[in-house]
Image (cartoon, rainbow, N blue to C red; front, side, top):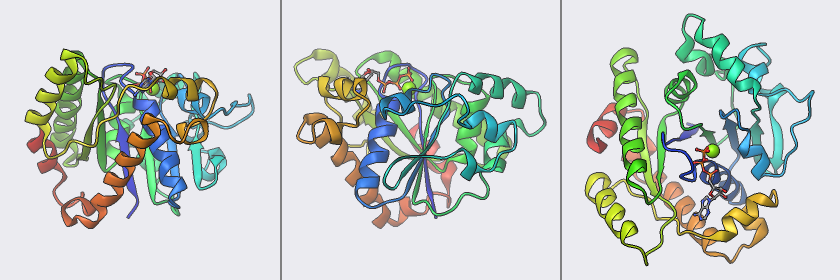
Length: 270
Ligand SMILES: Nc1ncnc2c1ncn2[C@@H]1O[C@H](COP(=O)(O)OP(=O)(O)OP(=O)(O)O)[C@@H](O)[C@H]1O
Ligand SMILES: [Mg+2]
């Protein structure tokens, strides 16, 4: 089964795209085949990978609106690592599918033929919109980055509430792959305070934390992943640990079959 990981928090700037791109590349470096779907009209995932989306390059818009096959909109970002890019037309695509019947399932229908990947990673904008619902119904696990800010805790709760709402209507919701603490700085009180809440609320679903590391910002500014920019940095070490934890879940029967009782994971984490 393909693991489909949605990276989401309704708060902006918590490290969603950094996590989507870095985790995808780390999985690919470990020999997994990965497809990253950029659902954000900002197109940050492509930017972080140094990919220029050409004007005539088909994007998520063409998949959703023009019915282009998924393999016509995929770009090879790195060996083993492919991306469906987004640009500002993603907002238009969202308006168009919002007016259609079955609007929450557009992505699931359009991607029903996808095969040959071990992981599909979905990078979402910080918004509760139709695209978010599409991602929730398509993915089978959620990764929720939480930076060291109380608003990010609210954003995480919002995701779980929206997953529970969708579950009522569609009788399906994604399970929790993990809550991912980001921008950790142990010298600050706020880090200790927020980590305490995360541990209390979400253990045992807490992934290894990501420390604040300026190298992560520098890498993305250069269009490189942290493994290309500085493989010995804190950021590279931390994302390697997260990737190993996620791969390690596959030997845990409860997580390797997340579709068994997905709603239960959401209820437990709320
Ligand atoms: N652990 C980290 N330490 C330092 N900087 C980081 C870290 N993680 C991400 N950044 C930087 O913080 C900024 C925001 O990160 P990112 O774009 O991944 O957040 P996001 O949640 O995707 O934002 P948005 O909600 O706008 O989509 C980027 O410049 C990124 O390089
Ligand atoms: Mg982003």
